[in-house]
Structures are given as structure tokens and as C-alpha cells.
Length: 182
Image 1 (cartoon, helix red, strand yellow):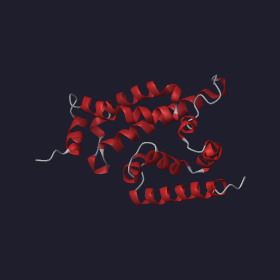
Image 2 (cartoon, helix red, strand yellow):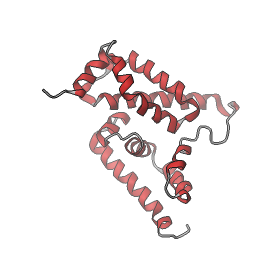
Image 3 (cartoon, helix red, strand yellow):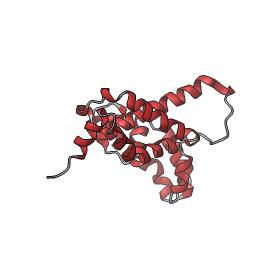
């Protein structure tokens, strides 16, 4: 008889003892999510994620998506609260230039380092939901449907916005790829 990992995970969300299996299975991906977006605070945010997920486990609704998508949704909320907290402290918070730049980790992985500044600018120009969908699919390896669940929009809308974001990125780098210095 085939195992049902999704069914086991849905059970693990509500079972306090089995919840540990979710931590083991999803910690690396979720920590990576934070490390790419807020490297200086990734460990603290990761810990906060698991505290909030455990506290909210009874609110998980399997009809709304997978456990993985739910966890990334909790992670997104934790990260949003982090950014709001930083903004609330205003300009008095000492910062190292680039220390909380979520795009810094991208540079190491880009094949064409010359495109990095342009890609960062294009990502910043995307509407926030499109940017988040693109990053959830590209970095976190979520399906478009899972990413839709994370940001709280219908799957069809997410696919449309993801398509639009990819087209904008493609169009924005087309000149650079052709060797045209714009």
C-alpha cells in the first residue's frame, strides 16, 4: 500500500508529538527562505516561524492547500512582521549597508554577474505580489498553486501574475542579453 505523505503531514500539523516531523522535513527550506530575505535575522525568524506555526496548528485548513504552502504562508507573515518592526524603529536603527538586502544572496548564484544589478532593479520594480510569487517559485521551489496559497490569491490569478512577472523580467533583460548596454 502506497504511503500518503500529504495525509501524514496533515495529521502531523494537529498532533503535538508528530509536529516534530514537520520541523525535520521543512526546516532547511524555510530557513533558506529567511536567509535569502533577511540574512542577519534568519535564525531568529526561523525560530519564530515554528513557534507561530505550532501555536496556529489548529487553524490549518487542508482545503486551502498543502502543509508546505501553509508553512511558507506563516513564514511570510513572520517576515512581514519583522520588516514592519524594523520600519517602526525608523532611521534610528543602525544598519550595515546591504546587511538586510534580500537580493545579496542572489549575486553568488548568478551566472552572468553583470546582470545582477539589472535583475535586482527589475525585481524591485515588480508589484510586491508578483515579486513574491516569482521568488516563491524560483527560490523556494513551490508550485504556482502553493505560492498562490502562501500569498492568499486564487491559483489561476497566481499563474497569470507569475507569467506577467516572468515576461517583465525577460523583457527587462532582453537588451542586456543581446549585448546592448542600456
